[in-house]
Image (tube, rainbow, N blue to C red; front, side):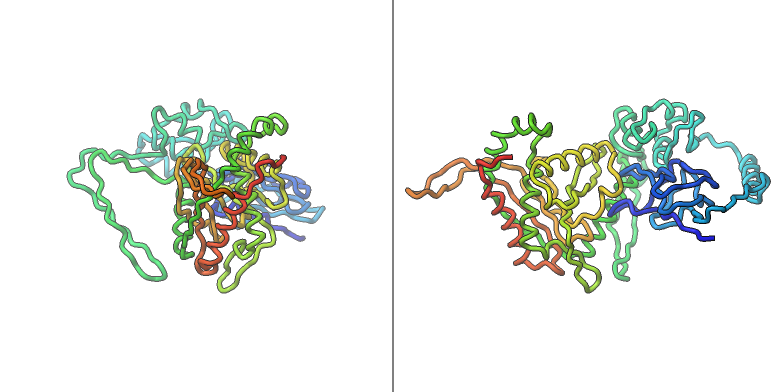
Length: 440
């Protein structure tokens, strides 16, 4: 009898685990190729895992509510058409063990704490993260049941429970009140075998201790890993984007009327990026030990801020094959679904180059951290009006122009200053050479 392992798939560049929300198939059920077997959730996306083969589900290795690492086997599927699943007797050793555990628990003294089951009496599922937040904020099971969920099948997400907390927009917190003396926290970290001392942190009266949520922890680990992996260098160029500003102001209403989409600057920047990547393909690479992987496809990740304050990077696959209208629709669709937690796992992985718009926060420039395993990232700043010298056949003039800084961070192991600097200059050239009479 041939058996096929169903594996927990990779959910994205920085996602290492997922929670099983619901099994859609029971042991003994027939499964078709690509038929959904179970629903999973991460702090980034909810998704279904399809079967990789046709057959019969013979073993589920995890239960609903379990947190499973990426790459782990979660179920076994038999490809034998005549397989028969024997149902275990009710009195199995596992059940007997569970009963004994429950009896031991019953002997323990009662402690008044918030106790919330992973699935309520009405069938609503609560993830471990949501239950932990509810416990820390002293939210009862009945109160949690009343919260309207925006996740799959009405599931309460992290954002739902945080939005519910009155007067709060943070995760679980602890308030340190009137300590006798400041508490000093010391930790040691290891870098290449060398032990280093973290700074001592004093905790004083009134300070709040805010626990990382899972997504913030993943982001933090990914950023530290990136800085440790790649020696970062950043080059800056100031681009005159006056023609783009004037062109967009002229066509944006007609564009929205015809295409049903708002025209932002992001697809314009991505179009310039893809042209420059074609000119300098050694920017579109990854490093594997002492080898360079030169990417065939140009997949542009666009950093997107979430309402929770966290960050996610949806990816536009084969961005160089899309025209400006196609890029606009893709950018708007991914950004909107990112903010409502509707992205699929495939839409947040496979990026080969990333762009982040720090100008949306009013910043004129930034020094972004590379999104591993890529080797470069570009930040675009706010567009500002400035007086500038304008060269004409009859002499120089002073005029008002629209300028924007481009910040290009790159991995100095494989991208030297000449390549990194020429690349960002080429992007600026494409932006400055924008045809003000261009049709869309």
